[in-house]
Image (tube, rainbow, N blue to C red):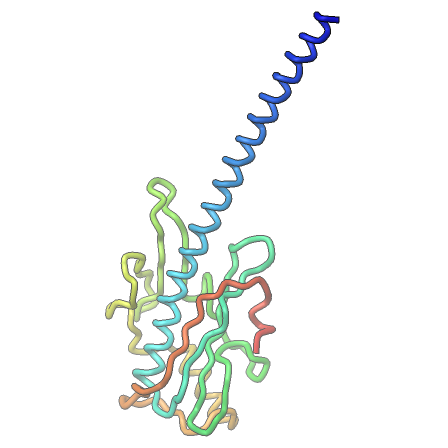
Length: 204
């Protein structure tokens, strides 16, 4: 009986140690997953903040008649962050509110997100953030070292936005907005860095 009791004690010690190792490994894996997810969130929020500022700056500096500019949450698809999009919205002085991009009112309008104006990644060797926006010539411009949009990332012309607004005005969806040098310096801008699962084209 004494030998059996000792064997049981040894077995429980071994099982307890094994369970402790499993819990420790699970904790390490879970902690790494949490940290990786947090790093990804910070990257996306930093990158899209600069992208939203790039869009808003162009609108405020090159279009008059805009009262307000706002943005949707950063929409990602369920299960990952490999696809992310935002929806810019503009208001005119007459109370009209219109989405830039695929609103269902116009055909062939571009979306605003990964592979459409912004690229996000981590450097495989250093782990450093990589945030790339299109510059004025549609060339890649790294901006990860900036908290606010640098002058070199400002657009003098943006054909997709110009075409989108022109069609919205011509069809009567927006009123009093036109491209000119006066701009809309007093337009209110509301940035949105919430990350949300869902389809961006369903947001209105």
